[in-house]
Image 1 (cartoon, rainbow, N blue to C red):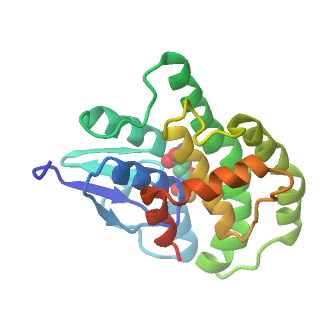
Image 2: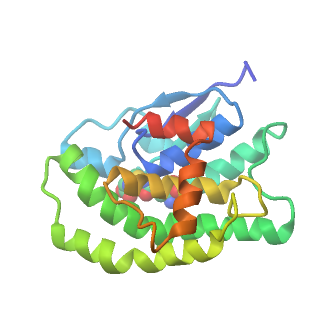
Amino acid sequence: MSDINIKLWGIKSSPFVRKVMVVLYEKNIDFQQIEVMPSSFAKVTRLPIQDRFQEISPCGRIPAIEVNNFYIADSAVINQYLEHKFVHTNKLYPKDPDNYAKALWLERFSDNDLAKIATRRIFYEAYAKPLAFGKVSDQDLLKKATDSQLPPLLEYLETQIKDKQYFIANNFSIADIAITTQLLALEMANFELNRELYPALCNYYKNIKTRPSIAKISSALT
Ligand SMILES: N[C@@H](CCC(=O)N[C@@H](CS)C(=O)NCC(=O)O)C(=O)O
């Protein structure tokens, strides 16, 4: 792989960038990180948008990846691409069709439904907004998110993990990566999972954080 030059565009604190970082670590693929904010954030902070970023990521979102002369955006697309491009590396998508579909569903649930509240509301209000924009968090929005919008999503995950080690067929997969990166975003926003309400999810989260690829992204944040 020494003739392959990989650049991952996006700041390490983004849960979606972290999804790709975990996949790269799991697959033992070397990469260079280009710490760039989404274009919409850069506009608010008036920071210059990096040369070429708009070309690499047409909607200005992070992450995007560059592999030699090829580039593509969106964590779900990037991770499927890496699975197909680097075929002799650790597999992160189940082979069995039912498990494969279930893993994709859990990834989509995390990227869309869970991220809408965990990242775009709680992580953004409590962590990113004060830190990146120097603005005060909206406590009403945060309370609504933590008290009523997030619980049904966590309850669903609790029913899906039960007492298993991983979400799908006892193998670490893209489903675990997508879910864990959202749970990490909640932790960064100082949201603590309630052990009484979500005992299985709490155990799962505690264990998965000891996995080297996950430990690596968690420690990169502190
Ligand atoms: N579906 C995308 C979502 C990426 C995303 O929303 N990234 C955020 C940063 S965490 C972003 O770029 N936000 C800026 C924007 O939406 O304009 C993915 O999985 O890559």
